[in-house]
Length: 75
Image (cartoon, rainbow, N blue to C red; front, side, top):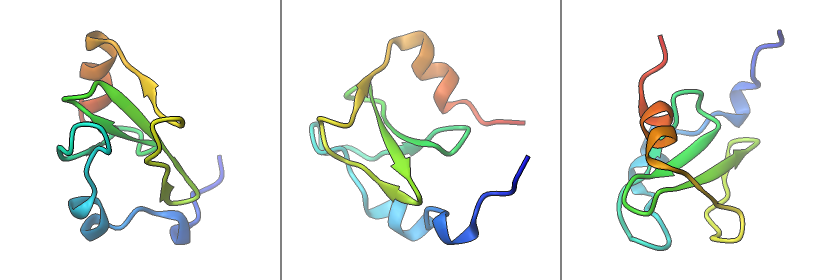
């Protein structure tokens, strides 16, 4: 498996500034680091090549069980 390109990593400082476009609440990085999760909005926003796509058109709805799985830390 190829290592991810470090140029496409989401910066922690950037993550701290981002909010959900719908609820205006903080976003959480998914355990696999491929999506930003809005717990309040139950939405998942994809991250493409290190760029969060924070459009409601790009977001997908997530159910409560999946929300728990996505926000759980990966071991």
